[in-house]
Length: 225
Image (cartoon, rainbow, N blue to C red; front, side, top):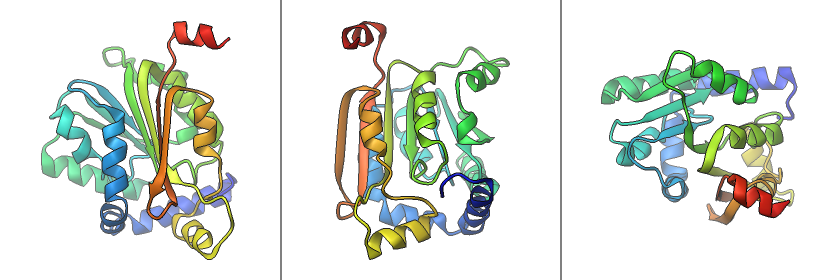
């Protein structure tokens, strides 16, 4: 999806339809990668975690291992079908620390966070997990920039997604099933924006990468200039 409104609308409709079976695919195919990625988040009890896109909430149970219903999980997605599945998990498990938002990822920036915090204690995002989203979302570089902007200094960001640089039958299949692109230099762009960068592209036979790092604080940023 290159970001046109028509393509985005079609992608939303697609994910609305597959939301009822999404967990069966995701839990099986991405289990190893997801476990590793969430370990890289280094979540601590009481923290605020932003999950964008959150899909069906498949990550929530992993976040809760450390949070134990403390802190806050902000789950954002543009598919109402996916969010309905996520809400079902929240209600079933009795989690009280999860806030689901139907929102466009391109709108999640400092202005959004300021508005979001109006009726709450000021929200400082401790860690951000973006899984299987940036390969399909428009303006993906701006989304990364905005996520880092709302992340607190020394906060963690982790991205799990696809990267297949060379065209192949496999890349075409992944693009078809995921309604996104697989050759976007996502982790390469992230590398230029954070410190303590690390990438592991060995998952799912080399097609899935996990990139992680820490937001630079003012001192480390000054050293870079």
